[in-house]
Amino acid sequence: MIVLSLLQNAEAISSCRDRGRLPSALLRAVVTLLGNKADVGIFSREPQTELVLRAFSGPTIMEAAVSLWPEFLDDVRNDGKVLSRQIRGRNCGAMMLQSSELSTEQMILAYDVTDSGTVNYAEEIACLARMYGNQVKLLDYSELDTLTRLLNRKTFDETFDRLLTSSEIEETDDSFDDRRDHLDGHSPAWLCVIDIDHFKRVNDSFGHLFGDEVLLRMGELMRRTFRGGDRLFRFGGEEFVVILNAADETLASASFNRFRTSVEKHEFPQVGTVTCSIGFTAVSTMDAPTDVVGRADEALYFAKEHGRNQVCCYERLVVEGAIAKPVAAEAPVEKDFDIDALFG
Image (cartoon, rainbow, N blue to C red; front, side):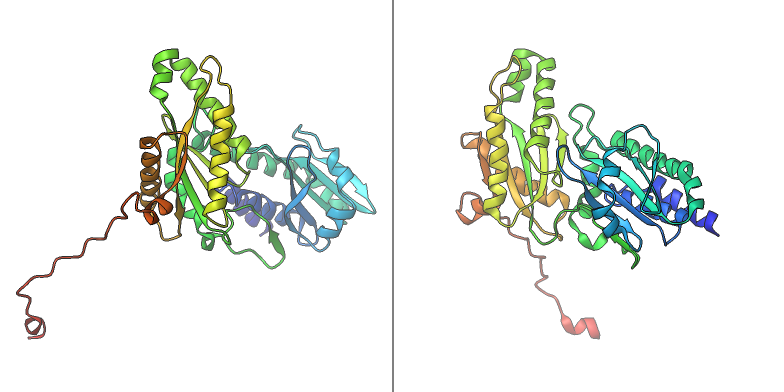
């Protein structure tokens, strides 16, 4: 029965298309292997920052993570091997997990157990971690734009609802605490469309090689400017999309203007100064992807038609009367409609 359950968990790892749920799938597989009395956790760490416990299972994981594991975890190396050590009578193990190109964070799987027999499971745990790593690579291959390594247009179309709807987060067991990073459902979501100003002129004047370099640098500036939890897409050509959370329009506008300024101040090789225009809109869970992008595009068009190198909000433009909000068409009613005939 344990073998079947383990195979089912391994299958869940290899079939998972949701990056946010992938660590959970690995954690469940390791818990199945070691048993419910084992402490199992997944830690993450951005460069030059402290470890953060993202997900865990077990009776003493929080105490162990805080008081016992930090120095041990600092010794873990990215060599695909499980590092084993005895700490206060418990057998501990940890290994580095495969990182995604979307993130600069390191992720570490760690466990501690009292049963000495589980020490022999190091290779099995390493195998599960390799399955996890292979799935991360497959997701990167299928979901990332070849040039900029941002999420691609196909991924946006497939995952828009999942990114914005917290109700789709799967339920977890009582003994399992999952601290995945999702778009914050407590703050409104905002989507912006970014377009490089006069990009055709860049290609015509300097060639497509330097045009590609501009696109590459734009992707780097986006990763550097926006937060790790924000969703960054290349839609194709010189157009990019960002989905982020912000408490209100002012904060969202500040985030997008911060990026616009970083582009304006950046020195692009051979090309020099490049600017971009940005249109953004609020997003609700009832929105269809085409509707949201359409509103942001309309704000972007206004920005480009009124000077470029600026950020415009769709809702603000509607309030100010700069653009007209579309009116839903009413269904036509037949003049000679006889309601009595309906029940006759």
